[in-house]
Length: 497
Image (cartoon, rainbow, N blue to C red; front, side, top):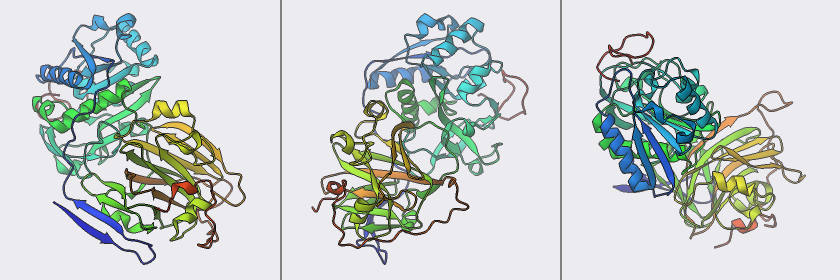
């Protein structure tokens, strides 16, 4: 059941429309097909053997058949030759355990990764090859211990990666065997999901307990999920989509920002309460769906802007998705105003638009500088899928990263504008446009040559200032057990890996 709520602010030009949905979002249909990729599932074990391995192999084959990639499966380490590995876009290490490759096979796999190949680790893949440092870095963390199989709450940290984009803002509640790891991968990888250690018994990672992550590693891609101990896991629609999204990212069928991320503060986290620091300018509005934590543009021209403070040196990250050939953008460096034209005339827009000219399309600084279109096109997910922007402002320099790839580098030289201070906002362009935003977060960066973070406020322009900026068109009037295979580690309880 959905209810509509009005959020009014004293200085807002119009109300923000809120549509609330309770509980986590239901799993979406599995992703559309992208033909051509080939995946090898490797499930050799030299230690404990999971009885879920045959079910896992069958699941990856089903996902491949439904989503356009071919799947082979083997337990023969002899498959790890340069010539054979070159046939595959990714290798899924499915609950492997112990030492499963010899030195030559390890060398072939290392070169495969360095040549751009991909690794997908599932569950006990972290209980594998303890004496191979390359593998340890690639997997991200080694297994340490585990408690008994039990329900737990999973907190989704990345809402744009295809492995987690289908999950809502609420906890992901599921039953599995929850590993503790010897090290925290957060400094090296992008954590996609973590465990709430208060929701189950036996967590040993001091409250910061990653359970799924991704990273770029020595030329290749690596995705790992700690789920998948039980046969039942592979029948869960949400877990199947999680696994599919990890594979799709690994083979390059979907893009995501897998750089490590620390130190960001959420300024919109998908809840109505997080909108208290925002104001609406113009008659347009944004509709909030608390089930999936999104804001969707509705009702025509307008700007939702963050009014808590002006920003000077910062990294802004947010996730966005457009339905088709839609138009929107993110404005930076503009003064406080109830008039959205103030942002057009005094700030800069990082554009979202599928089909305009280069300096007015996705990734451009609208009207001023085109993105590097080759890099942009390679990094961009198509309409209907989530993308992540990082907008990095340092002094008068503005850099734009799309799904972790730098696609624009612009320096302001206009004396009438400045990026050194101002607000940020997300745009409603027009009635026909449908763009969604979520997971907006902010990190202050050091201000070079200036002590402290305090910045003076710009003079606010008058509302009758002509709309003559180059962006004017954008606002139109309309844990181990007895079977442990690795070196000694603290003892856990329960059976299986």
